[in-house]
Image (tube, rainbow, N blue to C red; front, side, top):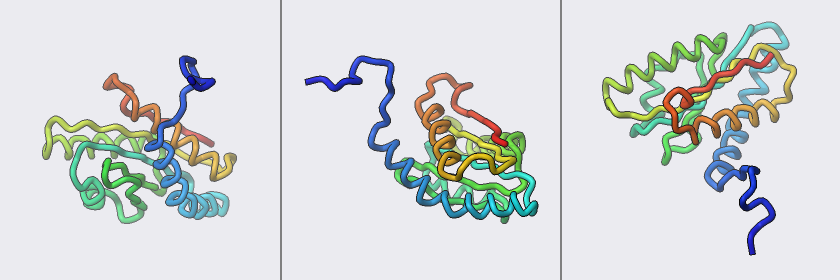
Length: 159
């Protein structure tokens, strides 16, 4: 018997995406609360959350070499090579610049690598932490399923 939403425009998340969302929530909640505190105390002006997926072995190790000392790196799914970076004092354009630099370094090692990423710049604390994590997840789902090259990187700013 078909389900109510079969053959409709409602898009259901598959199990892998749901598990990724849970991992993002578990690993991202505490860093976001800390960054929110720093924003409200005016010790930070902005930060960016970058979720990156690449067909590259040891993506986490590669990112450790290229990130700044002030960036937090978490591996969300080491089997599918998906990582999240929390970058202090970084707006969306800085995140995009960082991604371009990473892509160039990745392509020098593996020329045919497929890179997908979403960058969310955060400049205020108007969204609850939970909602912000879900915004990041929704952005990543869009780039994860993108077929066009220009849709494989998505960026947004929230204030």
